[in-house]
Each structure stands twice: as structure tokens, then as C-alpha cells.
Length: 85
Image 1 (tube, rainbow, N blue to C red):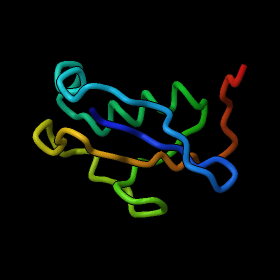
Image 2: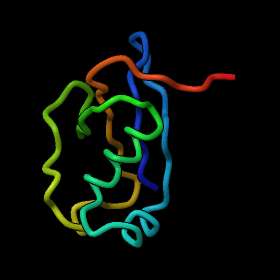
Image 3: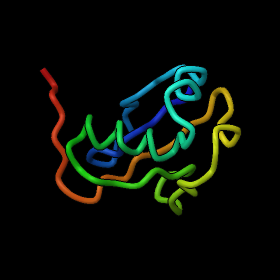
């Protein structure tokens, strides 16, 4: 699984958990694809990072850059919208 967390009011919540084989099947540039999926979920542009508040990942790396049980963090660059109900 690849998990992506979002920081909301100082708390990290898991927003996406997707099997690694699905990511590999759906994209040859997984970090770009995951960033797009997170944009679709949140409604805000942002960056993926391997550490909370870390530097953005290299979006041009290929499929082999992901491994099972990877954790990433999405840092939204503005207001984001999530359905909570």
C-alpha cells in the first residue's frame, strides 16, 4: 500500500491508501499521478513529500521509485475542501 497523509489543523489524517500495484498499473510517473489524485480529492494544488514539511519528491522518477508501505505527505498550497459528512 501507498499511504498519503494531509495535515489539517496540526493533525495528520490519512486521505489516500492505494495498493502499489494499482499505482504502477495506472501511471509511469507515479508521483505526478498521486499529486493529481490528491488535487482532485482536496481541490487545492500542493506538493508530495516523503517527510512532514519536507522537500517535494522528484516528480519525474519512474515506477521503481515507489515501494510497498511507502508513506507520503500532501502539503496543500491553499484552501482545500473535503467532504466530511
